[in-house]
Image 1: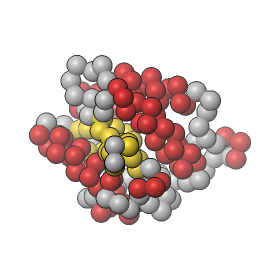
Image 2: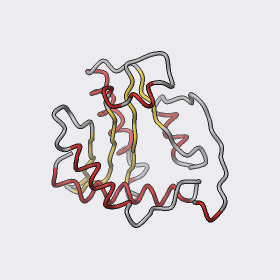
Image 3: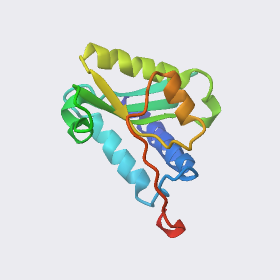
Length: 157
């Protein structure tokens, strides 16, 4: 990801947050956009690879994958005995390009870099009720480590 991609990347993260609401995701707060911009912007300054890629179609950013590298993935690494571990924190394709192979290309790009870096385990979370996420993740070779179901009162979303 380049600095010029930041606005589009933040927009995709907001699109994902709004989409996931219907499957149990939290309602985006007024600070969500600023927080996404701060976090993605900070990745641009990392001394090592930011492990953040965008996909472009006709020069427009249409997808985003954000992977937390091994040295920053200790929180999720404790979930498994194998390693080293990386964490896919965000994978989103804009609504107009879903089903076009953009997501699969992003996953392939990320895993090429993960393989080259010697990452042994890639972890992620997704909303199991999302009718797009579960089938897509399965096609990409991901398998559940565990499944968590929760219910929040309507006012707590």
